[in-house]
Length: 193
Image (cartoon, rainbow, N blue to C red):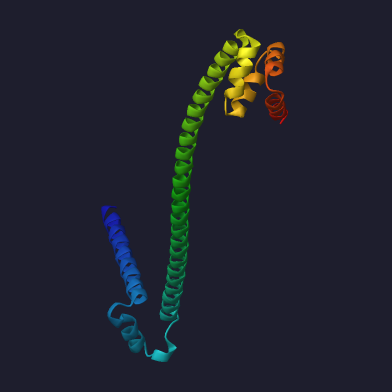
């Protein structure tokens, strides 16, 4: 029985070696290193013109791979051109935004300057109004003939109009009544404008 097992083991080893040799030969023929396929075909007596389709399929496979690579290159070139166009567009947009920012900064500065001028003008007008109110109080406390004589002497009739306009109606009537009729008429005419 031990002999039987040894002979079977030898048989298995022989079969495995034969299979390894056949598989190795098939791989060598398929890969064709050093032209082994041509040598074997020559030994078997076949024409070189009757070669198997293996080299043709390898060549067509290489050609299709090359075509695929070329398509990928073209796609990469196209994407690169698109990215460059987007880059240029973004740069133009950035420059436009910077220009708008500069314009807005200039406008903001101008608005700040105008706001300062308006604040100053408001302070001046407020002070002038306070001064006018004080003058009106003074003229209202005077005798109407004295107030009429003084107001008649003021050259700036617009100022006189402002004083009379802001007086109490009864005081304004007394002062205008005490003035030269021509001057009083001019003041009343300007008050209606």
